[in-house]
Image (spheres, rainbow, N blue to C red):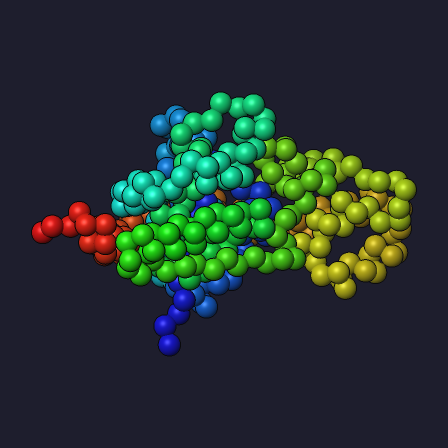
Length: 317
């Protein structure tokens, strides 16, 4: 029985944090045996945020290192770079022609930018169509995302249905979203969703000093016996059963509980950080993984685009 295809991508826009890991990356590693996995570095999406050539190159390599250090296995999963497959942007343009502006104006990123009075680039406005192309190109069955990214998959499903209806051919499969509800939104050190934009993160490959600084800066509520913000993060690293006695025995002792959290985060991050440092010494291996993954992904994309071009009537020979 053939395995289902799982696909997801991450923009190369800075250091990952534990919210990225528990909200999405952990799913990637855990599902490699259950699914045919495809993981890509969304560097063209990253252009909406990084417009500096040398910085982009380094961020791409850094993200590939992150993927591999966390346990993504190129023998089990297809790991590739979005920009190595030009069919992604070709398909996004085709989707543009069947998509209305009013539909794209409902996208969360657009509405957030508009609400904050930001000048909105065409790339920001149009990114849902490139994302739909990323997903639909490979007949993905499952797309694991955080709760706040569910709309991305809904846009891909809508676009697949619309294309198939307009051109009267079942070219695209409708993907399903997979959300791990218990970690769908990982809290930051200030209680809000962990996000680089809020400055409330704990870096995934943090040094011991960075971990100590981040945890000790968690604002605690002195009105309760349990520091809820500390506990909410602690639950990511130990079960509630394991934490019950620790928190019962140390009611009101916030420093003790923070120190326990620091120790658990250090023990979790240290082996990941050491693995990443080893990989960083062999950049050529990392590039080979991306190069080979791109070749294999491109073959799949070429086959899908043959179907697309036939459906829309531009394939004459």
